[in-house]
Length: 327
Image (tube, rainbow, N blue to C red; front, side, top):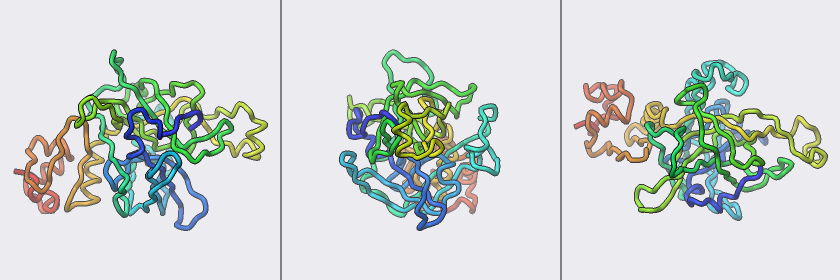
């Protein structure tokens, strides 16, 4: 991200607890890695863009222990799962195959399970699916996006940054795929910022009057990539040749998280079938799988209809998950 603000100055205060940096390696021990961001939706679960980890064999996730100066808690990934349509079903990576005319086919998301929970994680709550982010509202909210810091010649800065984002609009009328731009015209989102959380401001569900971030989406790509640094002479002293300079843009596209709630909850169940976690959505009470407190309606709401029917019918394939779940 170019011309952003250090996360230590986050006006809502909770970003440093859920925004993470991701390093994906083709093989463990490789000196080179691809860089992305993600959001902690549980102390040991990260949501990010599917193309960030689709080809990875080793993944590291870094939580901020301190934003200024930067200190991190680095944790290895235990496993990760990529949405089967992250690349629209094409064999090649999404960023090679994606076209706006086929946007309905793409669901560029992935979940990462960590080897251990982070003591520094403060998981983010998700915007409910019925909340329309495209509507103009007199009282806000504000929209934000995050990125790895870069200076004026796009040289990496060892900081996590954020900036304000314009109210999004649906891409080609799609509910799950949205577009926006950064409010400061000089601010840019760059290669290495995929998977960034797209958030909105909203009132905390526990502390009255406190404004916090809620997760709306996961950034997938930048639109109109190709803006070069203004001072190309200085940039080339560092990057050596133009093709080495990261691509950056003021515009971006992202995938709506709660639209994919059913798929996410199913993956969370599979990651820990004996003690499943649930996507934490604003305004919803969390079901307690061990208390037998989930009704038929809640079952249909929180997990896939197929799995719900299996639970209700006592199917053995779902028995470990359903035990004590349904009254």
